[in-house]
Every structure is written in C-alpha cells, then in structure tokens.
Length: 261
Image 1: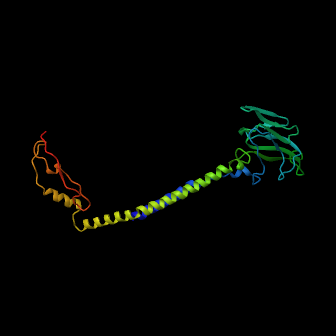
Image 2: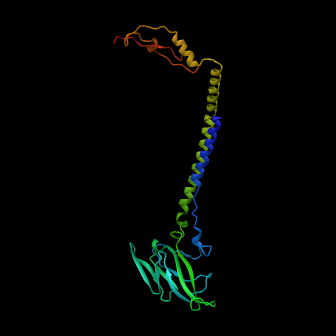
C-alpha cells in the first residue's frame, strides 16, 4: 500500500514539474476593449520614441464630415489645432490635433500615450437629430494592449531555440534519473515492507521480538561489583555490544578496564 502511494506521489510530482517547466500563461483581453468592433484592427502600433498619426477613420463607421473634438486616454478633450506636451527623459512628448481635426499626431511615443482615443464628429442625417445632424464616435487605440517592440523574432530566435533544447534535455535527464531511482530502490522497499509484515505477524502470534529476546538474555548476565555512584554498577555498563536484526552478537564483547575514581 505504501509502495503504491509513493508511486502515485512520484507521478503527481513529475506531472507538476512538466506543467511548471513548459506551461505558459496566455494573457486574456477584457471583452470591452475590442467593443464595438470585435477585433483589434482599430489599434495603431508605435514603438517607443516614434511619431505616430492616429486618423479619425474606420471602414465600419461613416466617414466624418465635421470633427468636433478628440478624447485622449487620460480623458483630456482636445479640439482642432490643440497642442499638449509633457517632459520626458528623451525630450518633449505629447499630442497635436490637426487643423481640420481628422487626425491626432502623437510625437515621441511614451507609455502615457497608450490607450483608447475617441474621435467625436457630426454628419448630416435624414432623421433630424440636432439641427439635422447626428453625432458619431470612432474608437481608435494606440498600443492599448501593451508596448509594441516590433518584430523581435530575428533577434531572439537563436537564444529561444537554445533555451528550448536545453529545457528538453533537462526534462529527459530528469525522467531517466527518476526511472533509475525507482528501479534501484524498488526491491529494497519491497524487502522492507515484507520484513515489517513478518514482524507484525510474529507480534500478533505472541512471539518475542528479537530485541526483547536479547534483553531477556542480557538480564541473565551476572552483576559485578564496581566503583560507581553509591554502590553497584551494572555489568552491562562494562560491555559494548552490537546486535543485528536476529539478536545475535556481531562481534565479541569488549570489557572496559575497571579503574578506581
């Protein structure tokens, strides 16, 4: 029973090891990020330090006739020709809305620029609305899902391949060592379990343990006088004995010299 439990523990440990080694967590986007377009085609990618232009246009929305204003990721409202900047270690970064409002120029891209941009515009409508015009919104994004570093595969292809090969070799070596360990100690575990079962059967049958038999034999040994603490010293204190599992002496007793204190 114990052997089976150890095998189960070993199997569970090995599976956990493989999951930890090769398992990766995949980031999951929140559903609202891609609304209302159901994909991220509205997202513009820009590397750190680059200048990026975000256009107020999307094939899924009407073409803007009159852009009213832009709403930035930090909820700042910018009208036509508005300019806003902030100081960075690389210089001045910020936003600039074109004179006709159809685009926002993002210069020296920083993390502060990341997020969603909303272009609010008005078009003529046949339904009346506000003075015969309807207000529409086009949603755009800039690195909303995290920094864009470009195509890094050519740069890191060799290290990634080497790391994967090394991880595979390590996993194979670990598996071989586990198999060798199991084969090496399997017989010893069975022998130990059989000995324990035999001892339990002998105890249940009323037989004495080998250690108890040895103790009864020692109790028949004569006592000898010696100088000790207030009287007699047991002869057992004068001998060093080693016994194996059968209760037999593995070597002759050695008498210590009796000396006066």
